Amino acid sequence: MNIKEKDQKYIMPTYGRLDVALVEGKGSTLKDSEGKEYIDFGSGIAVNTFGACDEEWVKAVTAQLNAIQHTSNYYYTKPCSDLAELLCEKTGMSKVFFSNSGAEANECAIKAARKYGTDKNPEKNIIITLKNSFHGRTVTTLSATGQDVFHKHFTPFTEGFVYAEANNIESLKALASPSCCAIMFECIQGEGGVLPLTQEFVEAAKKIADENDMLIVIDEVQTGNGRTGKLYAHEHYDIKPDIFSTAKGLAGGLPIGATLFSEKVKDVLPAGSHGSTFGGNPIAAAGAVNVLSRLDNDFLNTVEENSAYLWSKLREIKGVKSICGKGYMIGIETETDAKEILKKCLENGLLVLTAKDKVRLLPPLNITKNELDKGISIFKSVMESL
Image (tube, rainbow, N blue to C red; front, side, top):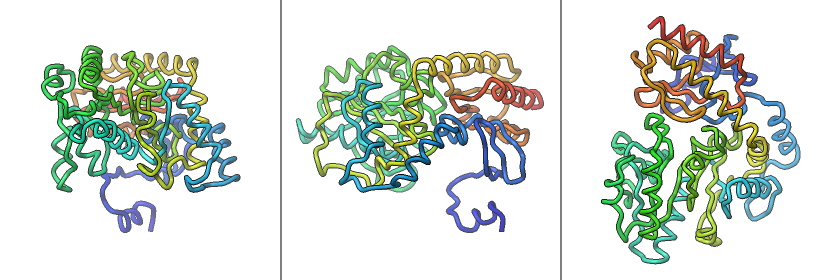
């Protein structure tokens, strides 16, 4: 049995897999089991921050693997504390909780927001999220997700969420009440179509939260860790959240989630109120320390410059109607069906993604100019052929 046959026989068919088995890579160039090469414009859905097998990252992870791979959270470890220090110093936040994924980071944020509210009033437990949002695959994070398509199965869902229209200030105001403990949103709705919130809406959300003693909770799972040209996307809006979550690209390809807390809520979760067996795992944390330590201002400026180059080239391509997003988080509205474009790109050696009816690009942040140009060339030829 080959890789695909074995997968189809033994793995639950929850993914619409494409007909490719990736086996190795270097940087933003990957190779499949047949030896065919691909330019990677997806980075594992914004996970492989420095692409495949980045030498410095591999060295950091291997060193930790050769030291100790895991301890329980009853004990201290250096990678975990180093990563917490880096996150707090770079963001101005005060405390961190580590978990294994974006959904878990969001679960922690939700629990903390409700703890903050119910400590003041047992009925202050409603969280306002946005329509078209996406916050994870657990029952509670699906409940927080403001898309009906995700609410079809797995009932009963967790109560306590209401959904405002994104970029509609009046919709947000109408839902705010003394029973609400938080407003939770993505600065750019990734799975919802790579749609940015407006500056006016984010400022209004902050004002409404302050007036009603509600927390601002920002989901930076996909938008964070340099993806938009800033370390975290909320920096584009000049807003400091009370709580924010992140995951995906934080450890450069290893499973990790992090929930960060401001000074206002740094003590909201006391001992015993939350936990995670693998949260802060030394190997994942060592990978994240390497990633985060390299995301300095010079590197982020390069991300902004190179992504601007990519945007400019995409705008010149026939069949591209519009582009949205920020930095290397790109949604492309096309005249041709996005899923058909994805398939044709795959056939021609380019890995892209989709989000709703858009082609989505999330390349590694250190993708070379040569790899960018190769990918652009393939995308252009596919668009022209369709």
